[in-house]
Length: 325
Ligand SMILES: [Zn+2]
Image 1: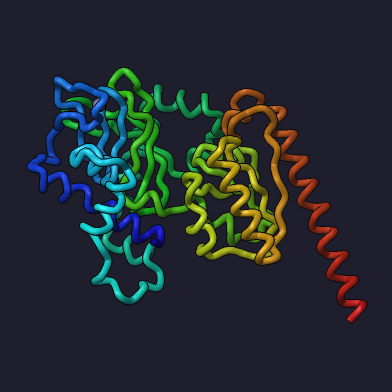
Image 2 (image 1 turned 30 degrees about the vertical axis):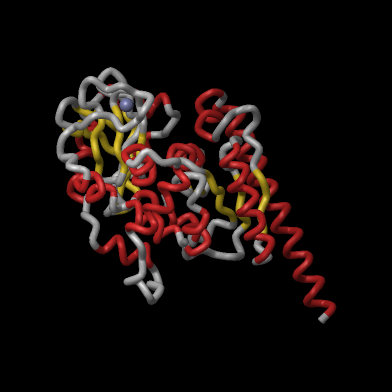
């Protein structure tokens, strides 16, 4: 199954819950069997997930089937496929992701309001400062602040526009809710700062998170974020220059290493050039920036030097080939 088909399948969560008589506009009893929920702590959100504000569970369609029908995840996945099959989709859509986005909302107006909100909110500004971002980067990426009304509480968050039709957020007020972040619909399939793939910079750093990307950009380094470790397909199908030197700087956890290896295979296959960025003992680039800005800055300059060396090698090789021809 292609990722967009899986996303399509998972987007049936709301109707699935409704089929069990659950009102998705209200909070309901948490579906996590390990959480005996005396209040209604779980809520459905339009990113096709349910969030529990008691135990922190985040459930997608497969998790909900597994819980409500009391089967393991493997069986639940099978049932999800059977129930929401794609037999009607005989022809593969050329560019499924763009097609999907057409039906999405346009948040441009909201972004300008949220951007204004940020200028008036010292807690939000302080949060971004602590994450190490420069004023210029905050402006360029159109960051904002909004207090989302989630019914029983407000979710106070930094808003990071991914495109005009989707955004991600970061909770800056843990007293209200434990949710770390919330993404609008469609965010799963989008890359952050995709112009980094097509501009005339000779290299492009690849990271996982939006804050990692803005960490590099804060130091003037050209960078794209995959928005999660699993978004390789989107990267592969994105418009990009094949003559760039790609710099791998993904998280140093299992998922990040897996993605790094998958990207290396891809670059090898298409004879694209890449180097790896070592951000020391830190778990991701943003942590490296926050904990030791000077060292991170030095590492970035070394990276640019490595890119230049790599470029020279490529040019020499090309020249040699030209001469020998
Ligand atoms: Zn729960």
